[in-house]
Image 1: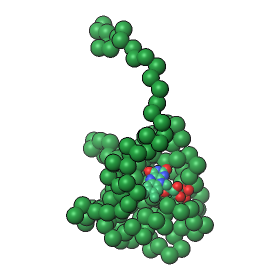
Image 2: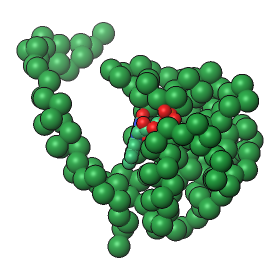
Image 3: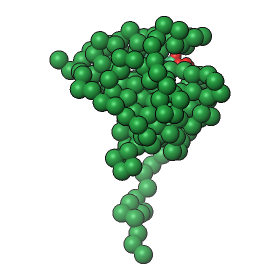
Image 4: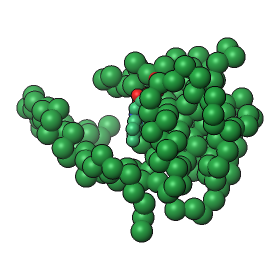
Length: 170
Ligand SMILES: Cc1cc2nc3c(=O)[nH]c(=O)nc-3n(C[C@H](O)[C@H](O)[C@H](O)COP(=O)(O)O)c2cc1C
C-alpha cells in the first residue's frame, strides 16, 4: 500500500483569517446571480444566490450553498429539489427582490411550474431544474448538490455581482 504524499508532514494548527479579511478578499470574486427557487408542501419560495457552481457534466450536477437561517433552506431540504434561474444583465430588480424575505414572494413575479414543481421565473433565459442528490453542512451553510433533470439556455449577457455592485460582462 502506498502512503499518501503528505504522510508525516501534518500542518500545524493554523488559525483562520478574520471574518473581515475574508469578506474583503471575497469582494474580488465576480459571480453570476441566480434566483434559487424551491417548493414543498404547497409553499414556493425564491432566494438570490451567488454561491452557485457547476460540479460535473456526467451526470449533470450543480451546487448551491444556502444559509441554514434562510427560509429556502428547509424547502430545498424537505422538497428535495430546486431550480437555478440565472439572471440576465437587466434583471437586478429581481436580484434585490429575492434578497429580501417576502411573505408572498411571487405575488408580482410571473412564473411557470417546472418538472419538479419549482417555480421557473418568466424572463430568465437560462434555467436548470434539479433534484437533490446530496447535501453537506459546512459552518453556517448547507451545500445542496443537485442533479440537473431539465434545462433551458439563452446566450444573454449575465447579471454579475462584485464588490457589492451589480454589473455585466461589457
Ligand atoms: C447578491 C446576493 C447574493 C446572495 N447569495 C447568497 C447565497 O449564495 N447563499 C445564501 O444563503 N444567501 C445568499 N444571499 C442572501 C439571500 O438572498 C437572502 O438572505 C434572502 O433573503 C434569503 O431568502 P429566504 O430566507 O426567503 O430563503 C445573497 C444576497 C445577495 C444580495
